[in-house]
Length: 160
Image (cartoon, rainbow, N blue to C red; front, side, top):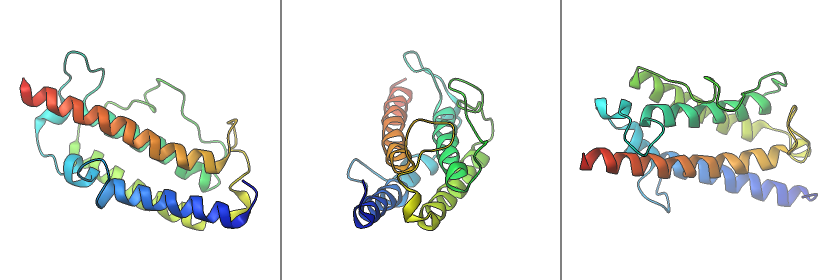
């Protein structure tokens, strides 16, 4: 992508998708805030056969990678997450803290996207082999992938 107008259009679309995922009418199902963050149950810590993680761990994981994007967009070039580390897959024990961290990261990520200079979107993310525009588009895909896992896990918990 070389054209600034094309980049602005992609960034606007990603911001809209992140907002819809969180609190508006998602094309998939209920918004994340209504379906997941509104949960108030010990079920969020349950692990079920056929599922590697709890809802709490999945939300922590989504937040971890949103925070990775936030850190990189904010100029923290040294920040990194190693795959399958505790930073990648936190094992949280306080649902209210998990939800608050997600909400704060969501807000801050949207702000960082809004403030990121258009001329930098095609540049490479420090320590990675992809661009910033690829990163934020990937965050949307990552969110929905794990949202599907959460939905499957909640259905299994309900049937149990």
